[in-house]
Image (tube, rainbow, N blue to C red; front, side, top):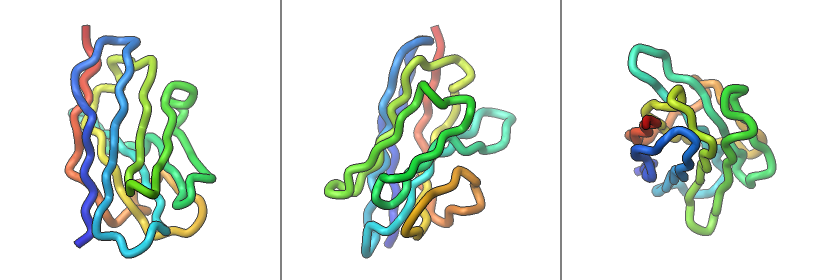
Length: 125
């Protein structure tokens, strides 16, 4: 059974940092891309970042480019989203999602059939 589990969310002050983790299990190979998405109350889910199966390709939303980085450790089946210089508008539930894809990745929501349960990130003083 394919499963994604996010962790690392929490409460942080503006300007602070958090690192989210997405642990994958049940995948028969590591030819899958991972995307990070977020949804704030009353807003639609939006793509934040993604990384290709080998980590050679990444994408970021304009709103987080330069502040967030993404990486993956295929030996641990885990993808990380490092979030720096956090702003109150980054407050949302963050989800990771997976799609079988050999190369490249997208931050378009419909491209991902497998989703985690989400982790809350709150940026507030």
